[in-house]
Length: 394
Image (cartoon, rainbow, N blue to C red; front, side, top):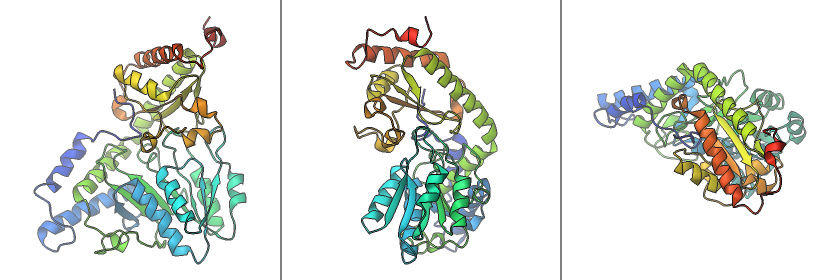
């Protein structure tokens, strides 16, 4: 059972079917004038419209990229370089995806100033902190919609409102929330929004950046002037077609999937916390994605837990796939104020619509058995305490 859908998702059969002609018969370059090229151009624009419609944007406000990381880089660097004569201050949060944080670290090396807002125990910024961080030199606020590790949702509508009241551009990384919760760029006061295909059962290597009409960016990739000159390079037509189809399918059943996945998520939370001593939910219990839950377990190593669950047929993770090769404590979880030792005992479960029929009891049993096995070997686990009595199971 694959339960790491925040890392990537399985491509949908209907998505693949719609892509195939553009890998074979309709292979034309969309920048050419003859009929083969025009067919590719038509398919590209239809996908652009599908993505725009899903977030209440206009078609010409969507720029295709290679994925969420490129979209984040284009949004942040593009604004920073465009407005550097106006100001050099950017506001973000402590729990952004590496595609945002590493971009900002790079800009700091070029004498831009960045304020990293704390998120506290629930994983959500405080609006008062945001207001106090704004200076006359602030040109951009970049705060993610949903966190990729703990699934918490930030109050982006209010953040965008404050940004606009102060004449500041607002960017949000919506890679994890896109296709899972409703997004309305007009209502939520969003100027720039990053999304990705492979998080919603579409192909890898395709993303998009929403750029509100009137916003100007400095391009990162120069060349033939594709994508209105903002992102040059021959478009990945088959991938974009797949992205458009995946978007349409995700939003067609968004409410239905959100309700079902929320029920599964909440049942997992209730059973894990009720059964396993010294287990805790990371992040806010309510303001979170319908498909993501993150636990921490006292006195175990998360990597060992992942391997034990894998041996039982469950594929999960400790957090972001982009950080899984490092042995450092998760910056997201440490930003919640947690002990770095406890942070290492984390488990992320991220669901997809196809996970609607798996045996939750068997899964929780597997987690409990694995945690118990690891604790028996752990020098950090106090074997003299009756934890069953502590949680009321005796």
